[in-house]
Length: 261
Image (cartoon, rainbow, N blue to C red; front, side, top):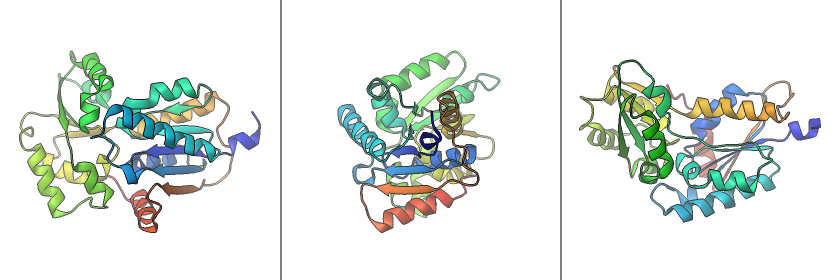
């Protein structure tokens, strides 16, 4: 592989702005790489759509990123990963392509058979990929799936700490707080409200998300393919969005700069 290929950007895709939480992890793990982030906010949220529709939207958006000359793709959306990653790997066997799944494994492998609450979109919770993941760890932990319709929309409008969001989360989490040891953020939008979730759940409850593991897996795939950038200094980040409005790009930049912890 020549240097020109190594200098091409990494494409990052999400149903909206949530995958920027994964982009932040990628940038920390591989700061020298260039990135193109595409958010399909026009069609967000994906998690309440039929699986066939999610798959076709995801394939179309991955094609768009490949047309921009990306050398690898991160599907930074749990819902899109569950619906389309297997199909995409069949379509593009030579492209390093990484999806994301809820971080059930590290949460389940804590000592003492923990009780875990997995917050995710309705489609992720009802999908086969999630059910398989849950079965793999059901001997190690008690796992409760919590569909969270409506939560993505708060982040999509830039509301990550409003009073109305706090009430929404309190109502959502109240039935589970006495029994759980951990919360898994099973949607890439949710790390943007992590601080508020931690505040409601209390310091005793550990919070997990899959962003860092996905970033490390992408670095491994690029290295294996001889595609890691030798660029010195920080790479560039370009934001694209299906809404194509300056407000949406500005929101993307703001979320990219937001401290998640």
